[in-house]
Each structure stands twice: as C-alpha cells, then as structure tokens.
Image (cartoon, rainbow, N blue to C red; front, top):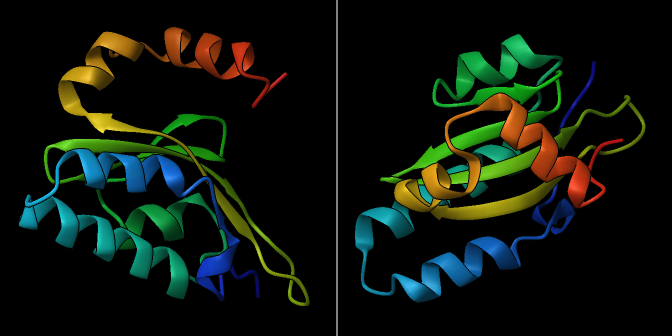
Amino acid sequence: MWCLLTIIVQIIGSNNLVKLLRKNRGNKRLTEAAEQLRADLEKACWRDRQDLQQERRDADCVYEECIFFFDIHLHRVLALVEYSGEDEDGTVMLLWAGSHSAYERTFKNNRNTIEKWLKDRNYIY
C-alpha cells in the first residue's frame, strides 16, 4: 500500500503556511482549517489522486497527478504531493499560501500561469 505521510516532519515548506497564519493572527477559522489540513496530511494514506480527492474534496489538481491547491477558509495552499512506497514515507512540499485574492492575482485562475510559475521556480521542468 502507498502511504503519503506518517509524520508531520515531512511537510516541507510549512513556513509558507506559518507566515500566512502569522499575518492573519486572530483568524480562528483560518487557524482551524490550517490545522485540519496539517492533520489530514499527517494521517493520510492515499494510493493515488482519487483517494486524495475523495478525502479532501477541496483538493484541486492543477498539474499532472502531484500538484494541488487546497482551500483553507477563504485562503489557498499550493502543495506538491509525492507519493511513497511501502517502506518509505511520502512528502508534501507547501509551495505557496495566500488569500484567495492573492491567488487570483498570482495565478489568474489559469493552469498555464500556474505551470509557468512552477517552472520559473524550478518545481517542475
């Protein structure tokens, strides 16, 4: 069976989410949604994209089978998801986090713009 994560240490780039939470300190609903995302990633045991999207209905695959946007209370998080084998753990790299309006400014609700953004930062080739 393929498992995605077993321990939170494997969530790379979580400082993007920490910055977002610090900027929105006091937003209880955002904090709770971010904690729920972290908990879901931590306990996840997904075999493929369909498993992920069945458990996290807000997961929007924006590039191949591995890059997703997740909704967290009026905000969005872009994550690179790498699945793993039985003997090794998978990883999740949080690439970007921001408000929905920042998402629209940055990515313009366009998959080509998202792909260009990912290539410019060497996340994909």
